[in-house]
Length: 231
Image (tube, rainbow, N blue to C red; front, side, top):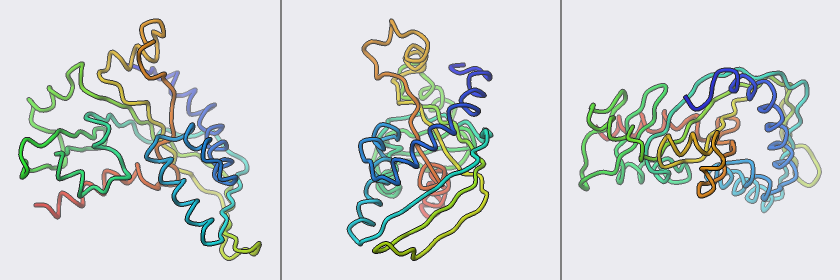
């Protein structure tokens, strides 16, 4: 296992709340560089485009957090396959033309189609041979941890200095953290634990891959819906 239970507990208790506040600060100030540093590239792109569109229309978004409590871990998901296949800025329908998908509560796996028609993709586990191939040490992998963060939240939308919409209350904020994609579990392990062996790898750090259920936490449902339509 790459991360033991104590490490994950510390992430949830000490890091997630800090990261959440930093991301919210970056959103409030439209700090695109900070969003790029804190988020996965697809998630940063989604937020930067949304903020730019609001600014162009004369709107500003303000999120205020108070009483951020330790988070609870909701799920752990293993991603197996090329990073492009999980790029949430690319519509699922387009990705489905190039990749087959399998998914359950703890696995999201893709494989390049061998023909334009491809095989049928479905919920559950893939055929044993396909799964063993994906679990091969050299295949691309990422691990996602999904947390819920209790906090008092106030959100307002302003236009020309006036509040046009607002909401507030206590809620559990969904936030997901992903490791970078590494070509093999051993490389992921080295990036985390063996820095001397990981000089040629992308430096390990957690990135926010979802906030407020914007994209990643809905990825499974989007793929399920598309697969049902494709049957």
